[in-house]
Image 1: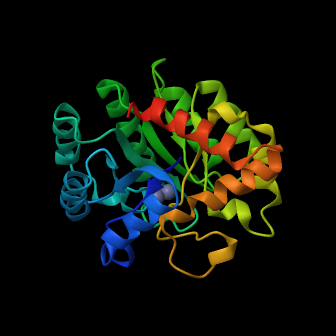
Image 2: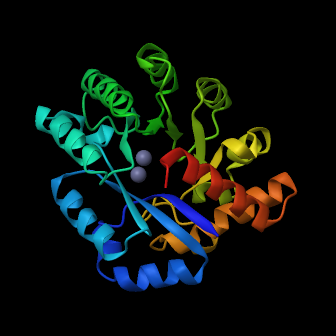
Length: 255
Ligand SMILES: [Zn+2]
Ligand SMILES: [Zn+2]
């Protein structure tokens, strides 16, 4: 059984036929989906989805670095309340994205720090996004880690320096469909080097459909393609990769 450790089910592309999306996920042997909610509306919908599919959809809540400018202190209060009611299993995604710079860098850093503090205060793992921001991501992780930071570096881009230090800190690394792209040599090389017991798999759907579905809408069922690629790289069976990544995900998110 697989787990999609990072999906955005509330995006219109997926919300529109969610019951079918979930049916296909079940048919593809997924035992759970971690849904990432990134604003108020998404959160409300996500909470309903989790009620509708109990024990199958689990939610994380955060603010994407793109939207760091939209931070309000109420978000921290909401995260605390959700954690207390056990309605979220992780904080995030949060992090730094210097590719588009949709929010000013200083603001992204400030909000990333807040989320890492919040995650540790609430004893929840952090879902971390880092794009073209390796140096600052690592600096903030090191500065904010009070020795109990847990989490995952999601949508891993193949930067081994980032991976090594993240692994040293105790974080997990999650691979998405881009590991299947023809040019993704560095991502595949990283998957070879990173121990399986620290690897998780995800789709980041509706984005980043794997090569066999490239250009189409991505959905949780396709996470099997990521497992297949990792199995090939590591000389393992897909079942072995599925079993271990599922175990890792269940342990980290305590589900
Ligand atoms: Zn992300
Ligand atoms: Zn995401």
